[in-house]
Length: 260
Image 1 (cartoon, rainbow, N blue to C red):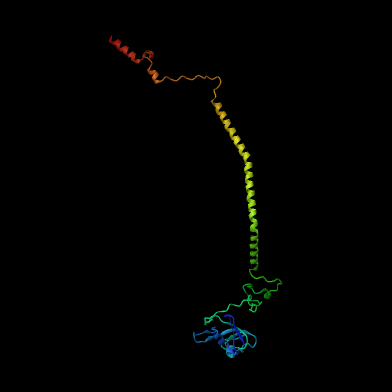
Image 2: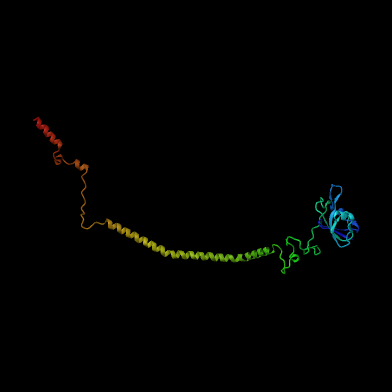
């Protein structure tokens, strides 16, 4: 029985030969018509069919008139006669109208028979300008985009992981060396500090000697201490006779002589 695979919807079904492709898609709930008026079934049934020669019916006159050429066919005019792969167009509403579980996309890693991208000149994520084996003439093995950066980052990470344990003893040794250098600097600065202290003590003793020399008595000079002046109490105790005649006594004598 012919096997029909709908690539975009991940559906595969076995059917009787001679059936219309649109009928097979309708049984699976796959929309293949971009309707001009919703709900009428009138519109564009374009799809792309790939298979061995004779796997489908030859294009009809109406298909050729509507632009069928190569793998481009009309689903409502194409009959399945062998194994084919079908790509439906985008935009005809919900692709899967009937809710049903969707099979996972084919993966060459788990399924050896899954279709792989061939080596061709079309661009891809790995080779934006096409596979070098298809567009270039070089002899080197092509390298995918970003492979060198990923390899360099992996090597850098491995080096960092290997060098991390060795850095700890080096850091400890560096700190010990710094401590020893600081101790040596302190030991070297101790004699200088002692010398500075000795110089300061010498200057202090010299200044003291200079002050003592300034306060010492000069040889040959009189050492007599001047007598203090008489105080007011001593002056008050002196008798009048010792004071001598003053202006008051002279006036009294003059007045007395005049009366006599």
